[in-house]
Length: 175
Image (cartoon, rainbow, N blue to C red; front, side):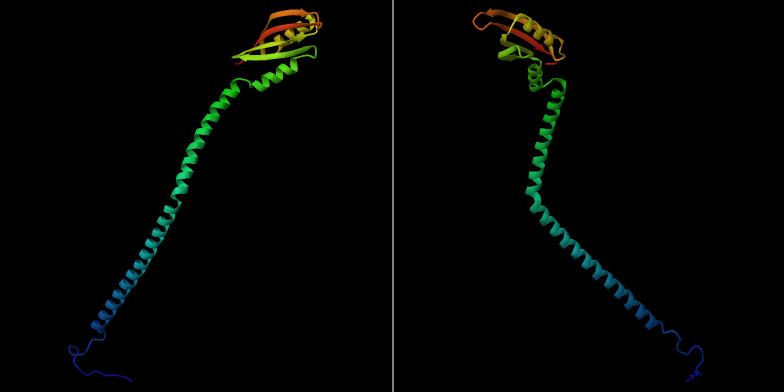
């Protein structure tokens, strides 16, 4: 159908109805703002709930965290003590190693009856089959890298046992 309008141009209705277009645009803009406000409100509520849940979980984990921090502090103290101990151990030989070395260097002809340790000096009391065996034992200790200055304090022959009773001191290197 063809429409013909015989009105003069100034009286003709406009082809574009600006009022309706403005109303539709206004409704679209208000609808977009309402949708954006609704979405942002939903996201804000969701974030607040997540934050509240996280705070509750954090409060429940606080005792475990405090215990973990205390254990960490204790572990650091233990590690510091171990580091000091390791530096001391590296600088000086252990008594187990010293006594093992002494046992390895003691021949079958020497019997140790008493062993006392004072600082870096070991006092040995014992018996030997003869003077040459005792002299060989002292030479062996003198040549060892761990022992220094073996000094014979006293040596006397025991006729009943056919042995020599002796007392000697030996210094230990590195102590």
